[in-house]
Image (cartoon, rainbow, N blue to C red; front, side, top):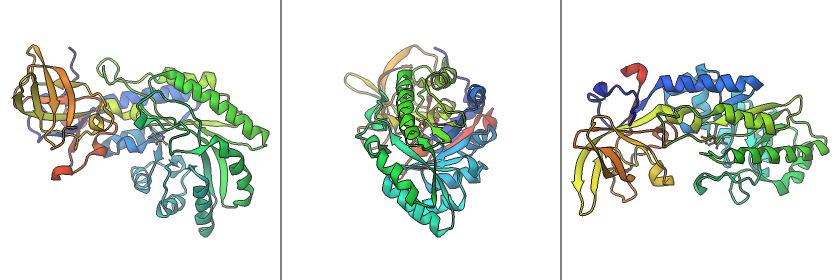
Length: 386
Ligand SMILES: *Cc1c(COP(=O)(O)O)cnc(C)c1O
């Protein structure tokens, strides 16, 4: 079994549980994104909701990525981190007035608009400020992402985006709205997508939708295909960097862009998942009648993905090389769903061993809660500890 390169001796002095970010993995990932995206002048906006750890954000900003925000707080965090407002896009089905106003005050690049009532409110608030807001229509393309139903967003039964049946109505509305400018189309079909044919299906659908706009003489300069590229949770050591080459190639090969059009992406998970681990200590080994429990000092308050999405995280015992045994790996929270894995094979484990829950850089630290009045986890980077 290969184990990642962790500063285990440093971990022994730090209060667990905590997040650990390997900035070398993050930098290599960002380098690969830029190498592949620059082949076609693709613009990548990092989906802030995956992780806003300050050190992680700094690396992402230094690599030149823009920011995809879904709240006023994220817009503020992106701009505070030094991301240029000209690279900030703002999506979300329920943008509050204060969030729209904040985005207008900051002159962000584009609002990704998810409904007709929202479009009318952005127009009204922009008028009050004497501004014209750039907007892209988030269209629900009715494409299946073949992923967990909680993280599928592009089907017509999902709450996201404007349905295809409403497009004519929206296009006809624009001439009457003087303070919004339609600059593009936006799509986002789901998350943790590993089947590339889903993205190919999206391209085909975008091409069809583009024809509709062309037939109505509406010119669009920006196409934004969202994010959703999945990562390999089973083998983080062998696949630390997602296959960005294959991902971008799908769009290069299947999406028909007009000469004036720029293509945008909003990647979250694929940027940050593999650089992060949740580091925890084993509190107790409890012998059940037919199984053994490894009870950790981390629970779903630190990493909720297994409880929320039945997500798999690879678990490693960093301090044991003994022959493997099977454990139910659980947390201390008073809920049965506080289970990271059942019948998981770990090197024989004892109280005090240090455990890494892998691939936890995305939707990990940011989703932490204080349930049971627990403290929010701290985070450390490889730059601080190596
Ligand atoms: C969550 C989200 C993303 C990022 O999704 P990932 O699966 O993390 O790449 C991109 N765009 C929008 C609109 C989102 O809501």
